[in-house]
Amino acid sequence: MPRPQRWGAAELERLSAMVTQPSLFYWRGPQTTALLDEFRRRYPLNFCFPTSSGTAALHVAIAALRLKPGDEVIVPAITDMGSVIGILYQQAVPVFADLEPQTYNLDPADVCRRITAKTRALMPVHLAGNPCDMSALMAIAREHRLQVIEDCAQAWGARWRGQPVGLQGNLACFSFNDYKHVSCGDGGLVATNQLELGTGLGKWGDKFYDRETGGRDPLELAPNYRMSEPQAAVAAAQLTKLEQIVANRHRAGTRLTEQLAGAAGLRLPSVQTADTHSYWFYLLRLDRERLAVSRDEFAQALTNAGVSCTPGYIPRPVYRYPVFQQHNFFSGHWPVRELGLTQMDYRQVRCPEAEAILEDSVKLTINEAMDDAYIDEVAAVVRDVARAAAR
Image 1 (cartoon, rainbow, N blue to C red):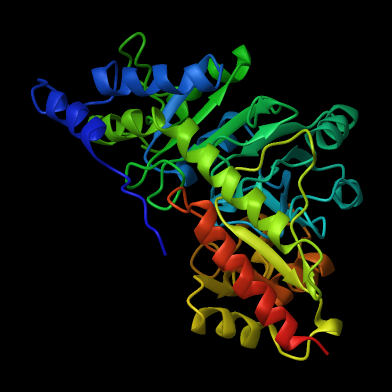
Image 2: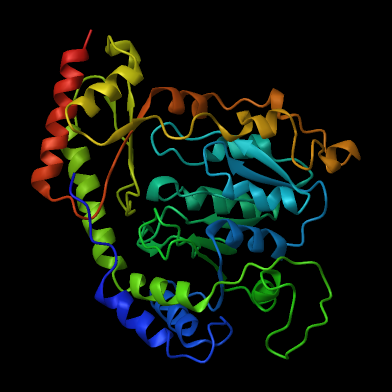
């Protein structure tokens, strides 16, 4: 499998400049300033705070909403734990909604079914870089007066109706984790254009200190999620490469879909024609009724033929993780439930489509170093395995 050279001269140049600085602290540091400038060139969001991780960015966003204990946030059943950690730490309640079968994103119809009097926010996750149906989700949010946090961790460079994802909701969160499109090892960023959320955004990730006035007399409780100047230096350099990285991944993913179209036994990811999928990975589903092998056997056959893949994505929907099944969030306790502020029982939650996706999907590796010839070879192997496995 071709592998990209992810870091090089651009990162070294910024790091070399960084080591001559008198301080590596983020506040108004030259590397952090450069990072925010590069980010805003691509995402016109006025208020930005760089964080130590994408998970931290999401926690800051949740904290900025000032949720009360027992308030509910609707999230997709297939996502990373980072999407829900901040919700739980703020004593709010993740409410899992089902997914659309071919986009793997929040199903607006099921979101509506999950709304209660305690619902305060939605968290669409643009899974693998495929934009959610933001038109439908924002309409729901307006109708029910809900805040929207876009989890863009897997969706650098993705576009909804021609606009970068992250510009439709109230807050947008990004990740610079080592495995994302652009990376500084670990890091994140949370941003908004809303004055009432943005003016205090930095406080929620910086112990509620007021860096503008120099105040170290916090009014509220907030964690320390600051990014450092070395991280910012690498992340700023990485963002200068974003357009080419996404263009290559989009070309590879689109070509793979074109090459696999019509192959018996395969269900391919669906992308709206006006949207741009940035393909953090490529998830296809198997039509088990048309194939004589299991999902794991299909994936093993691909692996044996040299295709980089894994059976499924995450092992099970998030609500079926042991921590949720046992409500073991704080040393064996869940205070909001024990205090009667929620009746949520994750042992009773079911999202049938999400469960089906994780049972019959195969995740194919996509990266920006893959040329057309390589993608065509992968597609040929997938078609051959499907043909051999047909009933």
